[in-house]
Image 1 (cartoon, rainbow, N blue to C red):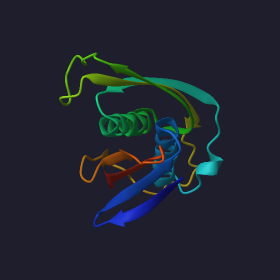
Image 2 (image 1 turned 90 degrees about the vertical axis):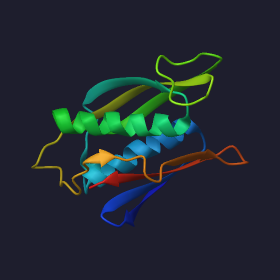
Image 3 (image 1 turned 45 degrees about the vertical axis):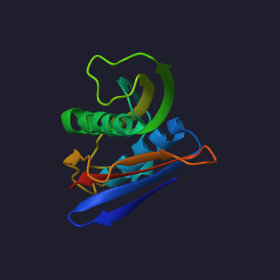
Length: 153
């Protein structure tokens, strides 16, 4: 589940998921909804693989959404379906440490979508960037995940 919320001159995304994988997939769909007013019109004709890693789930979310936004900005590729696999490796420091953590979250995602077609896709917001402002990712006591992220529009 995701919902959008207004944030001064920016736009926020609040996401919930049973697992971190589900949370990231929902965040991807939430970003698509920011970009396109009719996200159900996006067909799953093209495939893209995204792989990245981070030391914390919040950095993983930031990098994930940044990759999706980059695909749109550079290729006008709208990604709508996500199959995400995560691995957490303990005791393995990343090449460029992002925090004091000694574990790494690795994400491998198969994303499906299509190039923007102005005859079928109604553009909504111009998302300029994903921001660190207000970025939170947390696991609840029941094991579910919640996140908030603000995007610059």
